[in-house]
Image (cartoon, rainbow, N blue to C red; front, side, top):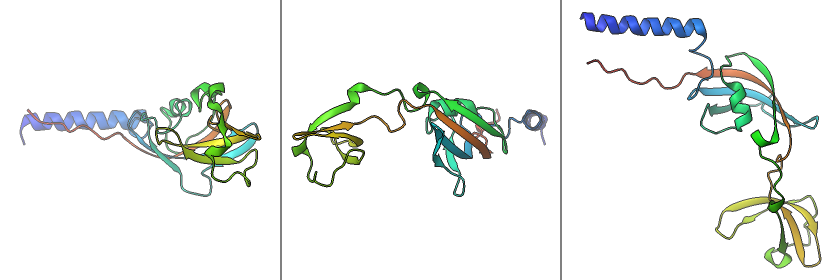
Length: 175
């Protein structure tokens, strides 16, 4: 084996040793594939959990989960647990008053079974699907809230990291 290859192998071995000592090989970094269990509580009530089912899987740094949670997971390792509080602006956003819209009743096919608090689905003018909460039903109009149901809410998470796969290594090409 050439000295050039032995040098490369030595560098790779040193990097592997450094990663294993610092936890870098299995700590959450940008590009890591992560599995975690979580419980989401809002205003003292559990609104979602992965406990008793499959863990949530995502790639760190790609925006697959809300930013306020993603930033707090950076550097965590397998088996680590953490409580994370996420402010509305780092979760599903603040309530947007412009997202509350009055829509003519004639825009709906069947309103007789509709109730305040119901969730309706539809398509916007550009064909994009939406969900909205029915806030009020008037004689000629229905008031819809298009905000995310968790907008304006502080989110309390309990997380446990189940697995972390390091980012895909860049191929090293010899000269």
